[in-house]
Length: 162
Image (tube, one colour):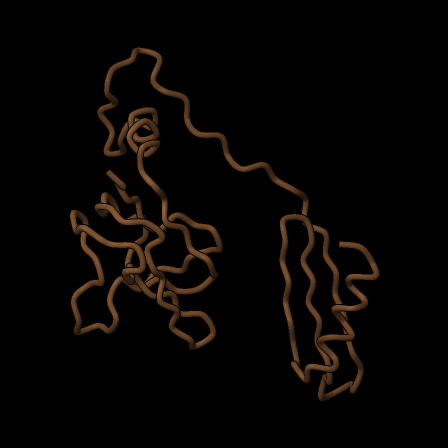
């Protein structure tokens, strides 16, 4: 992000009437506060965050045997998941599998779904956004616990399209 983009962002926020806006990317974090009650001045904080590479997946066991731990073998999981389609979060928010606490989940593992079926909702800024399936198939795995925070592009479900 260059200085002109930052300046235009500051102007946009000032005109919008918002009191604070935070923007975070992989390498920059910007907080813009406008109309501070005690100073009456606009403040902008820009902080560069060192870019960190995503952690590499764990290598398969050298012996080729199944690990005795509670976690599945990463190689087996990646082989299995390669044939599946991953439904990812389009937004940041809180993931809910149910429309309300007293209702059943939208989908369960093993359910057959069609394109356009609601899989879950994600609450962002007090708005509940239906997350619809992009494909038809069978729900293989729910990757996120109910009422958990999710990030943009975080995998939510694995779908077997066959």
